[in-house]
Image 1 (tube, rainbow over the protein chains, first blue to last red):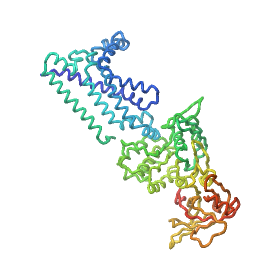
Image 2: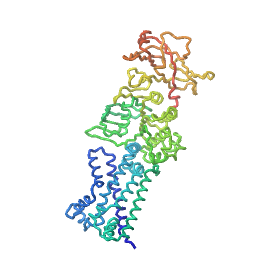
Image 3: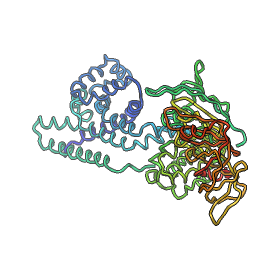
Image 4: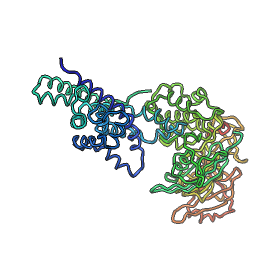
Length: 223
Length: 370
């Protein structure tokens, strides 16, 4: 019987990360899509940084940030009584940063494609900006939300370096699939490695096929 | 409409390649045309009135309410709180909703409960019943604009702004929608400001007009008077220049299929129109369709010859042409002549002339309907 712990942890991590990133990434993507601020390229660059930085670099800085002596880590300790580093919560924070561009960029593209025009139409019909966001922009960007969520989920499932840096490999708490595979190979336990690797391969392939199929289908009909 | 609301605007707006500085006060007529070439600032005025140009500096008041004011007590009422309906050039129906959903969107957010537009009436008046379950991308351009106008009405605006709603449509589709627009003020009690660059549409729809050019107001007033002004040549367009006159139906000649109209006491004939004697109709006479003679011509195929007196001649230096304004019993008409003809015939203000009218178009059809 293979150890299912890493699978459960991976799915929980990816699911929670995706949900939280929808909440955080949507306003950020909305702002980027509509702002005329001169700070936009800077914010866009920061958002894209996790795409180009080696995960070890990102993990290294997070580890420093998570330390109980740093403001974030210290605050976490005083609120929860435990440290962020080497905890599941720490993994979630790290994954959110690591997967941020995968949420923000598809959403930003979707919001930009909608443009200001339907929002102006909604405003002249009496819809407040908030109302127009939920009743017009969100349904029109539904496909962007789907793409962004699927990519974020899949990318989080596939992360390795950052988890290794900030989460270690505590069984049942922070040991995700990618780390488990690494360990199995290190200990020459190829059967387990095959099982987890094959599963991840199939999963990733199915997800990507779904995303590409979603992208070429006729507009989603909702509402 | 019983009491016509007062609209005041005075604003300045600068874009990178365009600057508009406009001021106007008016008692809103049923339909006011904002007329000018593209780039004259027509759409900008509508967007400022609707609150879609937050960078415009100035004052906008409507019916005693301040929608926008300047510093120190700078105020800017956002578009959703202005009770303005806006029909965009490109309709802008929501693609994720069907026609019924688009109408319901507006109905649910409607702001002025006293207005006359309930859902069933609007659907009936705009003949939308067969379209209700369709998606916007399955509608023709004309159908989209009908839905867009109906949707704007259902938000129960106190002022309806129409931004060249017909510009993307071909002539038959335009003719199909114009009557719906002409009836808006009477049926729904809402004043309309209509942006267009088409003299035909102004002549058909509007009572009052404002002429814009390069971000400035160049003229305003009743449509008939304004179109008769010769000094507005560049702004109103020379080829399409002409006047709008009102006449009444006298009788029909069914055999030759002609209708005789009374134009200020002078009889004129037009192709048969279905109408009752006494009904008022609007006519448009283009300057290029009017020829002048100094003696009453005889043995001509043209049937409409009106005696009049020249009021004004505007020679256009550097061109072949001169624009002439002639007083006839029913009003003023314009004739476009060559400068050479003006010289040869010794035409001058005060000269008695006979105006030969080659063609008359009936616009607005039966104005009594409004």
